[in-house]
Amino acid sequence: MKINAIITAGGTSSRFGNKNKLLEKINGIEVIKHTVDMFRLPRIDKIIVCANVTIIDELQDIFKGYDNLDIIEGGETRQQSVYNGLKHEKCDYVLIHDGARPLITKELINTCIESVIDLKAISVMTKTIDTIKEVENGIIIKTIDRSKLYNTQTPQAFEYNLIMKAHQKYEGQNFTDDSGLAEAIGAKVYVVNGSYRNIKITTQSDMALAQAYFDNN
Image 1 (cartoon, rainbow, N blue to C red):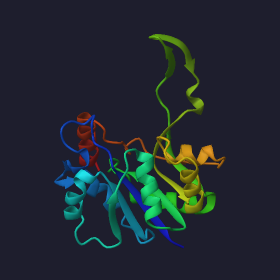
Image 2: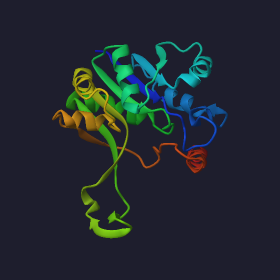
Image 3: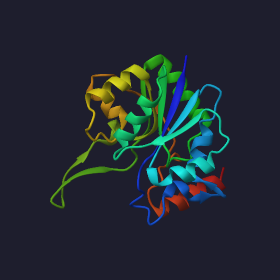
Image 4: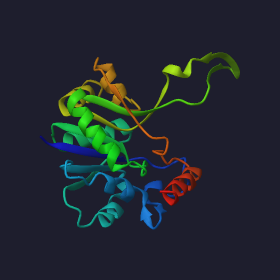
């Protein structure tokens, strides 16, 4: 049984500033390296980093000497980047994770592996804790029942043939996550409970929060 991990690193960090957030350092280590290192597990056969072409040379330096890791060119959208990763190498199961989530844990990754083997399609998620309002033209229309609402994180994990079928069917569209693609072909996607610490770095303030979490580990 072969299990791969696809790490998305194709974004431009437009909301972060004039630097690529994945190359920023926390405790002297690049964000992307923190993320990738968590996936260096005995059960992960290959890590595929789908990268923005502008940082490929730097990533090759960062991961020089890493076994079972390929750096490939990502796409213009997240969906295209993941599809490139899926086409790069076949496997039995695949975990898909945001490169900008460096606080993922090996324990949660292992839980995802066990769960996807049983369930074929899973998404790490957390219960929504904020009150959610529907707003139209600056006016609150209604308050939404949050008891059924979850926030999506990654990893998301799938049987390879299932998620490849979804990507092939909806190629060229712009789904924001792979769970949505799986749902679109009628697959049942099961929830794996995540962690509120598993944040995605998008802005400078997220870097500060990530640093605080690392300091308190």
